[in-house]
Image (cartoon, rainbow, N blue to C red; front, side, top):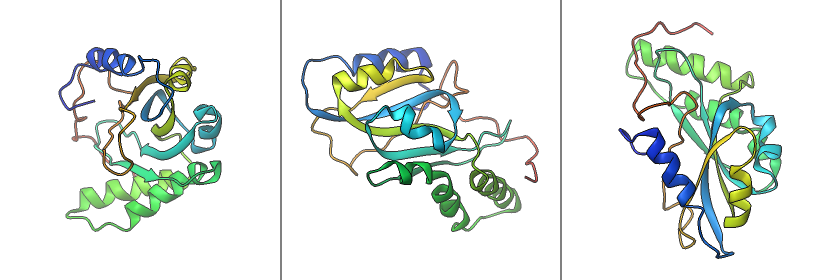
Length: 178
């Protein structure tokens, strides 16, 4: 969803992206109703190829990074995506103490296997994606056109806490130590 977009409009648009009768493969963004743990991903993807896992450590009133981890084929890279996201956070340099503290708690929780997966990028046919959209815990599936090229599009999940308008969360809360 675009910043400032109404959640209900996005959900309607995402559902409409699954219309059609073609049987071509499509890249699609999957957003969840609740954050899930990486070990749940293979079952959640329902056999579809996972090419990206979107991690976000939710902390009340603290803006934490949304991290997309590209994953090669197979279940193991998706299951290990939390560790990979933690490594990406650890490799960054931070401009101030608050940013460093946010990175520390984000890395720590990801390494601990938190339920912090906000979404997936998968590849499947429109019928497969429509089936996925009906699975428990799946909030939205938004398909790209069949001619979309991997690596040439960006995704941003509908975070589980987004209910009215897609906006950044407040960043005025205390950062937990762990």
